[in-house]
Length: 91
Image 1 (spheres, rainbow, N blue to C red):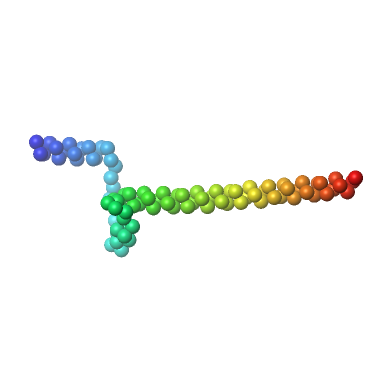
Image 2: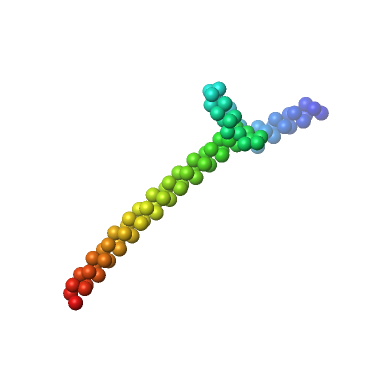
């Protein structure tokens, strides 16, 4: 029975979760160990770090996008101010 359970667990893990092995330098592993929160796995640490980087990148893109929109709006506003000034000149 124990062999059957072991085999079933192995089959379950193999076909439900794709797992790979990566080589890390000991120093890198040590740094990851320092970053662990509670009983977090290495997979969990890496996923958390990737999510943080993505969030920072998206924030940077949003800031740049809104900045560009602001510059375009300012140019449009300056164009309207010039047009208004010219209108007043003709009166």
